[in-house]
Image (cartoon, rainbow, N blue to C red; front, side, top):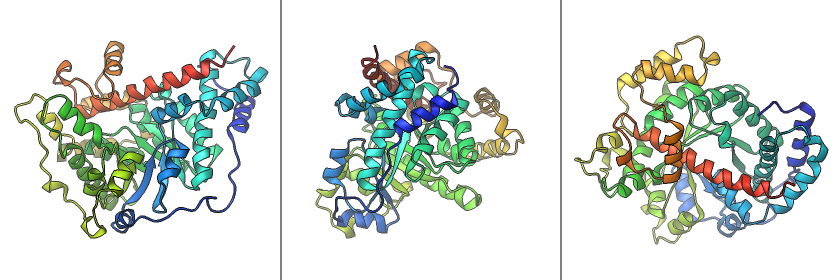
Length: 416
């Protein structure tokens, strides 16, 4: 993929841009006492959907942001609601994009679509919206930085840029944050992944995809999976509080992502942020709980249900464990004077030399198998040298890649 010309970039920006009306949302919403209780305990509440009408049907005053991703964007596009925007973009680019390859053209149209999906949400609710980068650039620092800047420029008041957890994503986020662009660093599955991200890259937000952690244990007969994701999330929260207390420049906050039900919303009361799908939000609201029953949970008190004899049980426990050796290795990384010049391979080499098994060298065949298996990998197919958080991150990224491919295919159907 070549370098986009300044003129063409400006043309795409004009197509993607849509002015947001000033003032409050046109529609008025009510408060919810359970959500108000979460807010009082210190939790910021986001909604996890790109579907405007669905969000409007359940929105409450306590909600302060929305998140989108490649999967959610694909759901919106496949519904047909963006077809007119796709056709409009194809028509307007016309001769201006004649020098682009088909792949580059699809990428630019996809950029417009992502912006328009997010801008619809911004216009409706007047809140921040996370917009995710195309997964094809997840291993490219320069393109991640470039597109991060371009997305932010479309709506600097409301857009947050979602960057996926890869070696290059860590380094791209570090550069993007140096320009005060807000970043939601996504696809995290452990305390140690997010500790490293906070120290090295200082994103505004990191994530634990907790529902998938419960599922990977239960789906692989390693136990019921109960409390696994919740324990990882609460221990990650503690790790980030440690970082924020020890390093004044780090402000990274944790998002509890991949929430599956209302019970998880209640269990994680008091942590930084929840991003909640509409179904789980409604389940929490209809649970019959009273506000005074919502209390903070101590992560140490949770005992996940796992079979100790299972081959992966020790690797599950490492999702919330983080020893002194890991912290010391991160200290050594942060002491380097060339952090802003590192490549993804440099970061991988450092991790390997310092005993940090964060980045396994998955082959193209491995990645295809991961994509074919979906969000939840089959653990028996993978060797003991692979860390579970690393495998889960790749599964998430490949799942997003599959959905992005479907979105791109719909865009291609409009091209002559």
